[in-house]
Image (tube, rainbow, N blue to C red; front, side, top):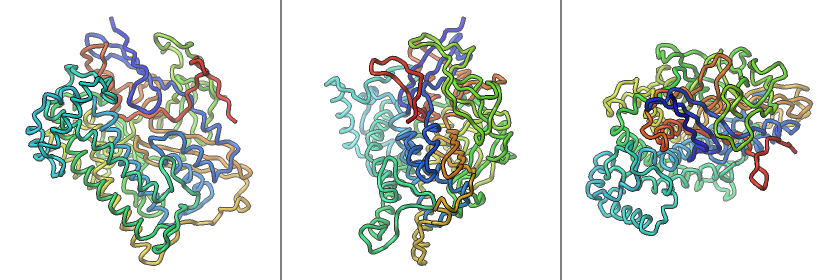
Length: 572
């Protein structure tokens, strides 16, 4: 008889996620993913000036900060027919790339690495052995025996004073940990280094957007004036500092992050066959080198791969009413036309309809709606999105940077291309993307400098900025590739105000409940077939779920001052 495992909340992610899994004879036979957070920002956006909505929806999340703001200004610009200047496009690319780099680094080291790295085991390491390993895999300068000996002393001090802090709640000693002590010590050392590096990466957002988190955006361009000699503008000193940050980012991504993931993955070959889940992958494409919307200029291509067929890439049409649709049959929302219909986001609805159990409860009633997450489908098909999907679509599209890096890394691990369809493959794709995007940052920077040197200082297009020039009704969409995957915002503008706003976020794709056909989404599908050594310590479940880098903060989780559950959302 199957035993039900409940992991709630799944920690080391943004937001609240509940996973229930049925385990039989040590194998997961079925799984259920439940988002325990209400989304309400779409309602908050209604009635507002479309030029200011980016500032509201940007607060969806402080981890993937800025990406919702970028998606929002793109949606409004699409609705009003605004084309931003080339400099603004490059600045947006740089800010987005900085977000992706910081997010990937933090995700692996601070949120996922401890699924593979046993901190306590690092105390048994010989720093000489760790130093030799570090120098064999990378030219990164921090690799001396003394350096690793000092890191080991820090860990021992944590242990001796019972102040484990960030390392307090690990599954240390679990038999699923396979790394030798020397590699564990390497992982912990780089965990601590990443804390410092990520702070520098996001300074790019501060330079161009004024602050981080939640930097400033502007419908029609960017609010950062270029003047090489003005101390209050984008001058030569600040642009030179951006170049320094890009170089530091490239070094860490390519000399620390990617080598670490390859080294760790080499000890877990069985995990290249676990966690594959769905066979369909979607990417909206991003990082334009021309105008946003000119697809051939995208560094990251747009498309869909169905059934892992790399010989063909299906186009993605964001305007196809029968293409992208969201279902609520297993969600705590309702549609005017009924629970079993799918709605395109341009006509989407956000109407709360909580019918779940009253907390606290032991198990979800999965025969009824069981999540606050809607269920997106493209032409009826479930899709995985994220770094792995971007690499699959890029590889199938024949983009050489994707193919070259993928083939090189898989050859180093001595595994076939099929190994990408796994928990390890998903983790590796994120590290490969970090290396790739770090190089692209240099391209964006050089293009920006080239524009400025040629005398083009434009950052803002004020065409159609004034509401008096707008049509009575307008509709548009914005697409981006967030760190966690494909993100879409759809906006309706009526009488100069937002009349409808809908967001389809990456974790909606990956973490949603079953659809009307009973098809699993990515989280649920990826867990089926996973071995679990000890149901009371489900490290294996955490590994696969963390490989998606879940983010449930597309919503608001409500409790009263006494901790009781509240399922009513009042929008002011």
